[in-house]
Length: 139
Image (cartoon, rainbow, N blue to C red; front, side, top):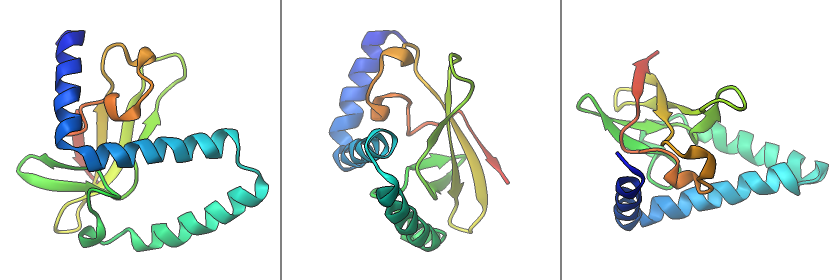
């Protein structure tokens, strides 16, 4: 798939997933705040908020497009329990990872490959094909 194909696909994805795109943009802003501007008081308060929220995010039914990446894998709908996070060795092509649940509560490790040209992409919502992970391994 060449760059034009990615651009067309991304435009279609954004048009169909406006709420999720908004979510990804907010997540990116939150990460930027934490990494660049937050002071120790902010981090302590955020840590408490995150821990409180994390305790509520284990039930499949509570996971939705506003707090989870949802996709189909081998005829099962999987929902991530947290935001996919970037992983890998700095200076090498990264991957995104997340833990996901199916309707029966089974856990999966999910991995997405980034697009070619990933170094030039600044918007995380355009970094991967979020609807089609590379793999999902049941834990």
